View 1 (cartoon, rainbow, N blue to C red):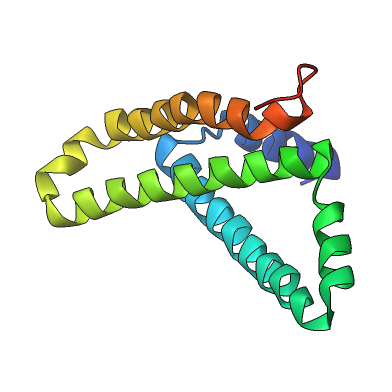
View 2: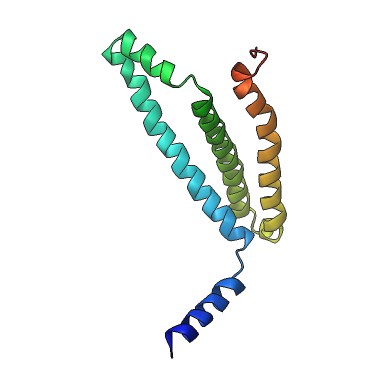
Length: 135
């Protein structure tokens, strides 16, 4: 087998490969869980800055008051919402075996509910940086 034919076979296998909703839901659940864990670590470090004095703590809080960090917090909120809703879906499927027949609609529901919940949450979270000054 030549290198060219091996590459052609590998490419045809990659192109034919289809990602399923189950794989995407699994990956999204793991990725959002890692994101929440990283945030928890960062939150503990940020909160512990109060032990170093009010100046250090206020400086640390000032770092978090910018639009880029706020966009990251919005992504964190999306990860929290998705992770919790997908966790409820997993619990439902574990305790109600007949719900496995509804796996794909439940997954669509989790994604849609996350998007619907994030629209008002993102608006409220980003409002302080809006041109009108927010609430």
